[in-house]
Image (cartoon, rainbow, N blue to C red; front, side, top):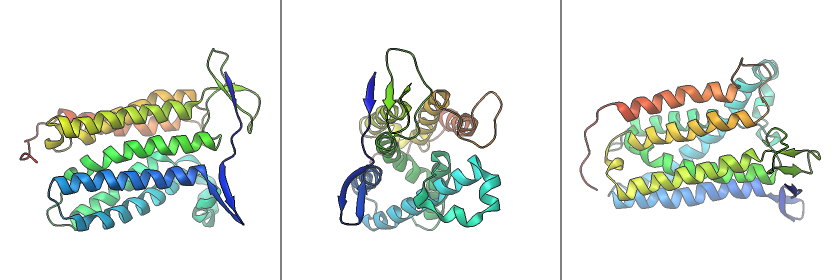
Length: 259
């Protein structure tokens, strides 16, 4: 057991605050851009696609995550107060919505970019998305948010900014799960032929990331404004992603030429 009382503000400069969550968000895009650029260059794709990809990822992540939160977790309130949907600065982003937004954004981009297919693109982007998941959940930990159920076990965190009850640090569970998944995906890309099988890395990403979510959501209090039977809403939302991943892994594909 240990106590956690870190401020969500990293440093204040005059009237402006630099927050841990913002720093983690910037790191996720910055490091992700560097890694993705290396893949693009090594496969002799035009480097000029990188800036548009980054813009598409940023917009689709924020829009998808915000709409996912408002429409999945409390649609009654937000549909009655639609202007509240725009208030991203007040918090409320859903990772399932971000995933949908990113996929739609990449599909749109691939359709308009000669020589780039959706599966080629998404197979590489999911590697950096897994790393981004690590940074975002660390940001949640610094914010003392998305914490788990109370625990009386030998391991727990007391989030003093919330209450004095030991809780599962589910943000850390997720963060390190995503870090391990990132390591597995990037090793598979560079050290095996999996990256030359269209959809395989994407499939492994969906199965592992949302499989982890399916398990770890059980440690969290329900966040939705309505009940979802014996599974939480987050678990129900993970199921279609897992099934899609299994389909991608099991379907026959032809290997693309060596990089």
